[in-house]
Amino acid sequence: MTNNVPDSDFSSRLIAWQKIHGRHDLPWQNTQDPYAIWISEIMLQQTQVTAVIAYYARFMARFPNIATLANASQEEVLQHWSGLGYYSRARNLHNAAQVIMDEHKGEFPQDFEQIQALSGIGRSTAAAIASFAFQQNQTILDGNVKRVLARHFLIEGWTGSPTIEKALWTLAETLVPSQDMVAYTQGLMDLGATICSRSNPKCEICPLQSSCKAFAENKTKTLPTPKPRKAIPQKQTTMLLLLNGNEVMLEKRPQSGIWAGLWSLPEISMQDIPTEMALNKFGLEVEAEEPLATIQHVFTHFKLEIVPQPLQVMLKPHKNKSANTIWLPIEDAIGAALPTPVRNILLNLNR
Image 1 (cartoon, rainbow, N blue to C red):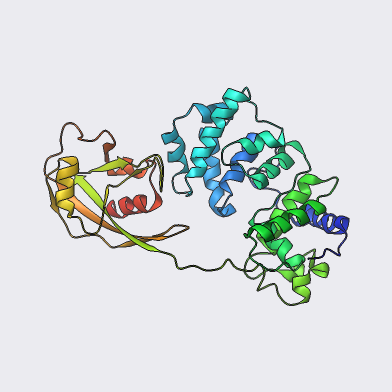
Image 2 (image 1 turned 135 degrees about the horizontal axis):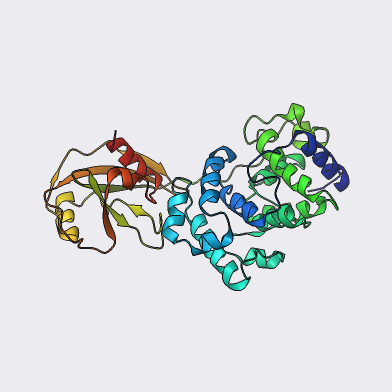
């Protein structure tokens, strides 16, 4: 891999483009508040800007600063994150806010190593925070930036492999300008998100087109090299809709694993009998109704087929058999900290 484009030329063209054509009006821009920048950067991990904007506004309205976030319960933080996915991000935010209160006197750290030490913050996210909040010359390398560099410098091979990623970090470090760091960092993000997009890139208006090797060799459609495909496992589960009048029973999931710490519907395997499970586990006598339409939910590493099984509870006990269960009106349950497919099941039930 060779770099025959002067570093200053790459960065100067990108900075000039960003100042005129880049994004300037996103809710988390035009601020040097590290808290606001941190929240946005975590939300934007693996999530599109359009999906983040509404969640960001609600989250910041409820948790306007580090102390408010640190003092909230994990359940409330998860509730305000519900639907955004990748819930470990919310748990990491909550944990990091508490660490900042305990170890940094409530002030977001400016030291780059200390930023990286916070839960859920990797090197690229730490660099974005340091650049935007503290004007530090740090290198970012998120998915958008990898795509821009792979195309511009004709880097073949999956960008997530250790060898290619290391080469990209080395290259990215050589491109960092000595000034205008905020415009440069934002420009990389904006170019990847709006011009050098994964599909249908707008090469005709790209400020780097004249030196882009992928464009010159007609390889923008094949770069970056896709991740080697593996068959995605298919799993199945039955979710019990334990209903009594207008109330539904929710069960708290364990603090580790998928949907950790969220409220959900009790699950059984496809081989278990729902009525027997309801009686044995929860002490509930029920009558089974016809299962609802099967739902497909895709995780990063597997697909989950969910069969919602309504069960009418004959007599709701005065005291729950399990401390990890709660009865709520369906309308209230919809607003709880739920996984997205569970919320969708309840929404369909409530129509």
